Structures are given as C-alpha cells and as structure tokens.
Amino acid sequence: MKGKKKILFALGILVAAAVYYYVTLPAINIHSSDTWVMGLFLLLVLAVAYVVKKRLGRHEFKENKVVKCFGILILGIGAVYLIGSVLSSPIVNAKKYQGLMKVEEGNFTDDVEELSFDMIPLLDKETAEILGDRKMGSMVDMVSQFEADEIYSQINYNDNPVRVSPLKYASLIKWFTNRSEGIPAYIRINMATQSTEIVKLKEGMKYMTCEHFNRNIYRHLRFAHPTYIYGQLSFEIDDEGIPYWIAPVKKFNIGLFGGETVGKVVICNAVTGEMKTYQVDEAPEWIDRAYSADLLVELFDYYGTLKHGFFNSVLSQKDCLKTTDGYNYLALDDDVWMYTGVTSVNGDQSNVGFVLSNQRTMETKYYEVEGATESSAMSSAEGQVQNLKYIATFPLLLNISGEPTYFIALKDDAGLVKKYAMVNVQKYQIVAIGDSVSQCEENYLELLLSSGVKEAEKDTREVHTVTGEITKIAQAVLDGTSHYYLMVTGSDDIFDISVVDFIDVVRCEEGQKITMEYKEGEQANTVMSLTFDR
Image 1: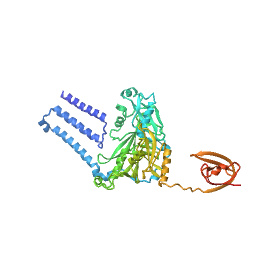
Image 2: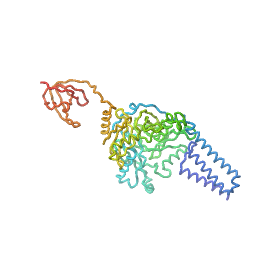
Image 3: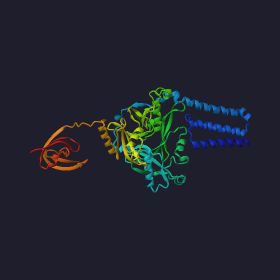
C-alpha cells in the first residue's frame, strides 16, 4: 500500500506540474524568469507535500534532513535568481546596455523623402478599430458569429500603409460551433485612402489568439519550441495576402536576464500552423515587425541615458536624453520605422531631436532638430479648432518642402477624422488646418512663405519670343482667374495668358498677328508679354 501511495503521490505531482505548464506556458530556459519561478513553485509544492505526508511536528520539521535539503535548494535558487538579476542590471553594466543599440546621425531631408498623399497614413489605431467594427456590422453572414480583434498591426502591403487584424469568435459558444472551419477572414484597412475590406480566405485560420487548447497560437508556438522566450506577437500578411503570426524570439546579451534584443523570428502560417525559424537578420523582407516599438524605445532610452554611467543617469544626469511619451510609424523603403521624439531628462518642454528605428532590422537614426514636443504640437492643432472640440491624434513626422513637420489628424467625439493639421517642428506657432490633406498642405506652404521660413522659388526658365498669326483661341477659368490659350502659326505649342496680367488678351481674334515673350512649361507656355503687330 505504501508503494502505491508513493506512486500516486508522484503521479499527482507530475499532473500538477503538467497542468501548470499547460496553462502558464513558461519557457524552459535559464534566461526566463518564468523558469526560475516554476522551479521554486515545484520545490515548494514538494516540500509542503512531504511535510504533510510525514506529519512532521515543529521539532521534527527543524531536524528533518529532507526538509533541510528542500530549504537549501529553495534558498539557493532564490539567491542565484537575485544575484543574477543584479549582475544583469544596468547598475553594473551601464556601458553594455548603452551599446545595445547602434545609433547613426541622420540628415532628415536626405533620409525622409516627401511622401505623396496616397502614402500618408491618415488613421490611428482607434479610428481603424471604428472602421473595422463598422465594416463587420455590414457583413450579415459573419457578424453574428465573429467580431473584429483588437490587434490592427500596421504594415506595408504592396507599398501601401495598411492595418490588418484577424476576426475572432464572438463567444465561447460561437467558438464551439465554428472551430472546425476556423476564422474565415481578416480585416485590411488602407490607412491612406481609408478603404476597409474584409478579406475572405479559401481556408479558415485555425491558429489564433482566440483559439483554445492546442490550437491557441501561444501554446502552438510553445510546444514547437519549448526553450524559446517569445516577445510580443504581431499579425501580418505576406505579399500574396496570406496571414501569418510573427513571433520574435528574445535574446539576452547581458548576464542571465539583461540586455534584451531579438535573436530569431518564428513565422507561423495562421491557416496551417506551419512554422519556420529565421535569424533576425535573415528574416523575409515582407516581415515588417520583428522589434516591437516598446522594445525600440527602451533600447534608445538606454543609449540616451547611460552615456556616462548608471549613477550619472540618476544623479547629475549630464548629457542624458530620453524618448518622449508616445510614438508613431513611418513607411520608408517598404519597411515600417518607429518614430518618437527625444528630449532632455530634465523635463524640458521642447525636443532636442527625434529618432527613427526600423522595426525589422533595428537600424536606428537620430536627427538633431530642436523644436516642439508632440504634446505641444497636438495642443497647438487643437487650439486652432477649439470651437469644434476636435481631439488631436499623436503626430506623424513628415518632410514637407524640406521642413520637419508634424502631421496630425483631428477627430470628433465619435472618433472619426474631420480635419488635418500640419505643425512646423521648429516653429510650432506655424499651424495649418485643412479639410483635406492637399488643402492642409497648401495652407501650410503659404504659411511657410509668409513667415519667412521658406522663400519663393525663383523662376530660372529662359525667356523666348514668338511672332505669328493666331490660329486657335480657347478660354478657361483656373482658381477664379480667366485664362486664354492661344496657338499661332509657326509653332505647335499652346500659350497661356492670364487675363489678370494682360487684360488686352480679350481683344485677340483668330488671324490677328501678335508677338509674345514666354517661358516654357510642361503643358502650356507661360506668356510674359503680349504685343499686337499692325
């Protein structure tokens, strides 16, 4: 009987350990805090079970050799964990932490090209969620069974900035009735055009965060790679629109628990569950996020604050820089770059620069541009429409006519974008508002000229002369101004004459001989002088 009890006891411990592992999914890795916590937990369970089984009294408890062994093991593991944590911390490894991220000095106008309007992401995540929910509401064949997930990853898809998010089961009962087919579609939102579509799949996605048991994506990844310590997962689609989970694998570069970066990337097909592992520098180019924005911000803060050691970062804080609160994303060269401002640790109300960091490669560039913080720019934009009580989104950094410019969407109480604002980074009193992006940019460029930030470009085109009889006359109104378009003998060009500049053009008739001085244009030549020949 005693032998059977021991076997049952051992089986009970194994079952408890298996259930704990199945539920919590710790990585079996000495760099994982979960592994150490699980080890301590199991030792405590065994120790308590032993004491209860032996019915040890207080005196017996103190003298029992097995209990002492348990105590030594628990204290030993706890001591190693604490010592490892201290030796892995920035307190004793400031130089190593400061060197985790390599930062280059960048030139803003060279590195950040002016984007066309169809490449500017106009939506933040909250607005994307609203559009996604509205689209789901119109899908009568799906809305009763599924709802939009809250993921909405920002990626580049076929050179367009988009947000993608899978659907999820509306409830546990809906999971039970639909799990055999899986999740049938995902949402794709073009952030420039705001077009929203439900992309239906030939075969449903079966490996999801909303799944249970072995098809839960976290459990699927853990069972495939028990030793991997995963970072934050992201949902992405490849160039063919096939859905994948991107799982970065943490790499610890300093001691047991310190200096976290990314060493590998596991991609998992959301439909089939098939997985492939890549070194982070060999990951496919369609992957847009191996490094989370939060990790990149943390690494730059180490770089900016630990230049002169840990204690300087706490006490005198000489030359210490930190990122501002919040970040946004910028699409450059088919990659997604995390953007955030950089300010002094002393809490100045202005930025000393900003940083762009590639979420796939961790390539990071710092731009020394003094100017307003993002919160100041948001307040300036809201101040221009305070009567409407619109709320500013976190800015997007753009290159507008060679000027670092905050681009801000202004939303109403329903969370929908109503207006746009552009705020000059260096002179944040220059604020332009528009109902469309093009109108906003036009107003902004006018403000740059009127404030003296930019000078009007000089017209260096050569002046030519032509003489001939008028063969054709046409009239049009551009921006409220009447224009005459003429053609003359001896030339196939079209000549544009503004009525405001040359009122006598209304006297022109076909067959009349004239002489014009003009500058060449793309579609029509601009007339500089007009004389009638008699």
